[in-house]
Length: 413
Ligand SMILES: Nc1ncnc2c1ncn2[C@@H]1O[C@H](COP(=O)(O)OP(=O)(O)OP(=O)(O)O)[C@@H](O)[C@H]1O
Ligand SMILES: [Mg+2]
Image (cartoon, rainbow, N blue to C red):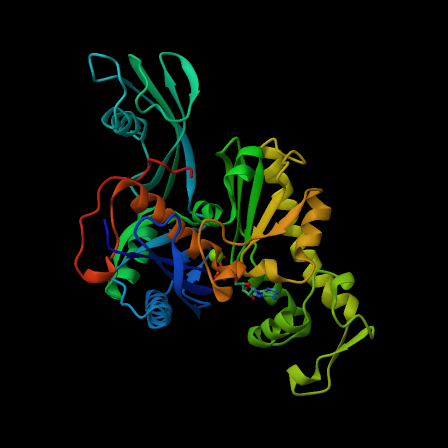
């Protein structure tokens, strides 16, 4: 393909919709972000599920318009992030006899074995989002990562199935469709974000990725290039805002402003340091002070609650203190001053704030809250760059090349 083309990712989050548009030059090894849009939307979703279609659609439309205006191109097709507490995972296995008489394993065999592995009984209201190969086994030889071209008689696949509520997938698909956008694919948000912020070596050595969003937090754990654990947690930065609203007996909007402008994870990271009493009169329209200890204490308590959950998940994954590449944090919540330091001290692991890898991005797109949307672009690139499927071609915007079934191949970069 000699034309440049674009890939778009839309992340309908609990507190904001983010859209990212990237351009891929022919032969380029990475997409380049050319447009971003972010629109606050605080009541469209609850715990990751759409509860107000109208608001979700309007925010999606506005975020797309912002990104399109910056990129200078309309968008007709996009990858959508799927997140929330309704996501479930299940391990499954499939087995086939290799098709060719000479025993050489073909792409068709791999597709067939993955097809058999995804025959699982899910409740009727759930749909498979991903079938992620964990390993292939050829005639009893385990841990084969890519069986293509190898010889064998019997091919087995050990897969992780990620599934979610059909209703939710339909709802976010409808949001996109109503904005004139076709769904190129649904991608589990933490998986997308991990593609944008973790490099190959970190995944190989062992690393965790924590996205501290507005309504939820997600964790993925990687070892020897595989995602070995994932968890969604019901704590987001919005919970800190709620706590402050209760503590200060003020509105959510005011509490959010106070969090963004004065918030820190504890007193050590409070930029104001002194005095002991914080004057909030400018936010409250009346003389109002609060003990600095109380303000920071509320923020720290909620943050620690999240980190305790993360600690438990790392223990469940058998990786507590055992991740040489440490933890990478992303999401708007990770911008709280002192958050990374608290993660490091609590989990006793090296910590890094997420920066996109494998995608060229300008400053605005480097914001940790864009990790999922950038990850969608990275995901789209592995689907389309590697396997010959194309999103919108820049020269033929509006004309589509039919999508194939490149779902799973080359999932791990
Ligand atoms: N400097 C900051 N300190 C603390 N919190 C912040 C800061 N900047 C942004 N946030 C919070 O980050 C949240 C938004 O982050 P993000 O965009 O990652 O969430 P989301 O994707 O909408 O939510 P979710 O991932 O739960 O669906 C908001 O709650 C916002 O208050
Ligand atoms: Mg998010």
